[in-house]
Image 1 (tube, rainbow, N blue to C red):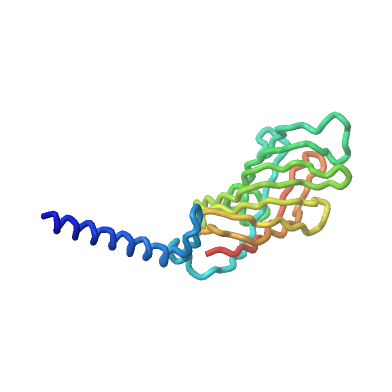
Image 2: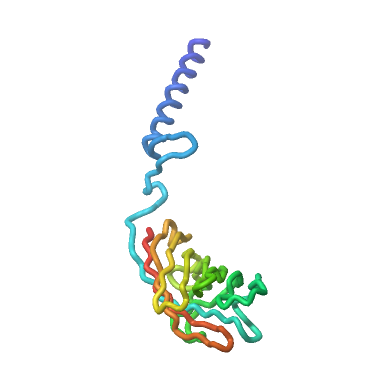
Length: 194
């Protein structure tokens, strides 16, 4: 019986060592608190490039704004609104009309970050609510010099269909209302994802 126990313990030890070695081969190099992982283990196939065009509706005025001021600009009367911060939940539609098909919601904030030039720091998630990408997000973060005809924001990530996303978005102001500060901005997003 003791001989059988010793043999079972030996077999268990060998099996454990081989299993550990196999896991290291499958997952990659074991480096302690982190390791290299084969992307196929996560179900990642060939990377693809997707172009998404949406219209971002920033409604600041009226009785139902989609963007609200959460931090006012200091009382120094800056011509660039330096320091002002707005949180938003903006509609993203297929066309420039607010009545066109809702595809996603842009949720995030922008802060007036320039003391001399009118520029924004923008952080936002495009949360898809319809179509092939329903339930997925694209995350953008960067500087938006809003007076330039064409601006770029980097795509820094995403979720769902856009896991491991990277790329950029080109922004063009479609319309801007000087009285209400409402804006419609065309976003052309070029995103690499699996």
